[in-house]
Image (cartoon, rainbow, N blue to C red):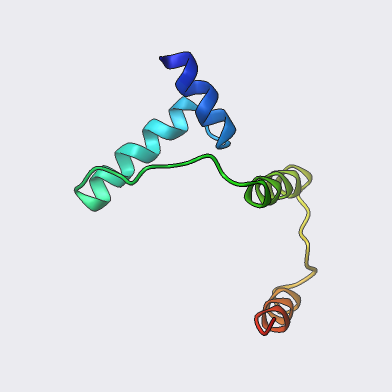
Length: 78
């Protein structure tokens, strides 16, 4: 069971330790059993990979916060 859970969590980009930590945090915050997590779709997986690569390279997609907000504003009307 642990190996299967480890594999499923890895597909979500999480370790078993990450999942336990998240689970316990949500129980404390919500005072309830957390919602079900599912394997992310392709678009979400690509965004997660891009984010990890940017963090590892210590790079950003935008040169400034203003550039980020300008892009968000421009794309919010699509």
